[in-house]
Image (cartoon, rainbow, N blue to C red; front, side):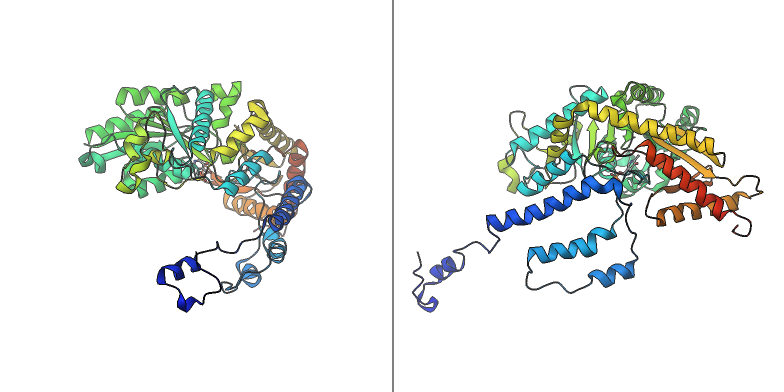
Length: 499
Ligand SMILES: Cc1ncc(COP(=O)(O)O)c(C=O)c1O
């Protein structure tokens, strides 16, 4: 042990190194950390419990944000309380809140507080959830959560999966597993069939795995947005005749645009007959399987070879939490497991599971913890009611819009999504003018900071869209939004205001 009284110059090189590394780096003590935690906890709890009474949040411009935050990297640290004040003043108010009950755009997320707490425990302990021998409990909790999902989906015992950063990673991972069945020489001739209403993460996944965009057949959907089985059969036959290799079908089980569910059972029959991989993208829609109506809508999902589920969408989880389930679970390690020398100590034995062998990431957060915690604390029944209430809110929205007399329903409510547009009474509006009007109504509503809806296109025309996934949303929120839309629509379409 180096004597502190001895000048450094008199120490041996070995003792100099010992002296240099004698202490850990400075870090706040337990009491200061408790004070810091309390300040964060006070803010988060207040924010969480008063969100409904506040707006959806301010959308700042890039120049506003540059002015607020631009600075060189600080060489010396500042007091946590001061930095937190800066967060309160500059950062927190300038983010739209997708967990607000009147944020109905895209597919929002609205975690329960148990998920928030689980995420905090995950960050606080920073457990490495990649290999069994580093964190057996993390792997076992993930196995358990995936088994619960299997039960919900009616998936067999031999199915397996992994939690991912989201639906995009899950879809990509599914395609990599599905492609593994193709000999290398066949890969450029392979064709994937899907609907025009697929999520674009699929196109990106195809790009990432090095396939050509024309290897996707995006088939027209029927009036309800469902993949047409007759067109699929024709396309497969046509491709076979032309020397292509039909490879996979990606079905929507809750399309992002309209909530439509493709005819999964019929698709499973075709895939079985044609030896194609069936992947169900249920990133948004999967919690429907918790309800009786939903199980009917999703009939056949248990026959898919793989399923994407996104617990951070309609399952009350913080970002991020996605999931891929694969019917023949062994296909995951067969596709992804690698055994470099520097990982030789953590080779799984005796039914241990290395989740790093199931997908793209080696270092993984302990995502299963927040899902386990919220399911244990809330029970499946809470989630079943969440799904039911959100579907009811979509139906209520449709009825109120119809009752108002100034809206046209563009896509009737499916799952918890409804699409519509404002149509001024008695007016002679062209389709292009209605498109422009609806974009302006949507923009103006968003700017009020009271509600946030997104727009899309249905049959080529602009539609406004409501997607419910939030346990906070109520009938009163729907009534307000419909009244605001009607008021803004009437004002913007008055004579002299037409675009
Ligand atoms: C059907 C569907 N699939 C995939 C995704 C992508 O999921 P993520 O945003 O979690 O990557 C989404 C996102 O909205 C989706 O709706």
